[in-house]
Length: 81
Image (cartoon, rainbow, N blue to C red):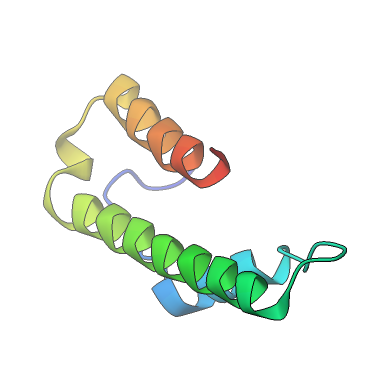
């Protein structure tokens, strides 16, 4: 079990690059559209990680477990919707 005082910090660039790795170009998709999708996905990923890291630094350790789960669900939901 992880120490509840231990903070998680995610590298935004590494995370975004990992997300992009799973986002293949669609069959018949123009390069320009694919690049725009990749850029949008990269920027959204970086911003989400920055938000997460900010929460972790300021108030994540003060949140109740239920609130933590709700925050993480929103991060995941934002990524897949």
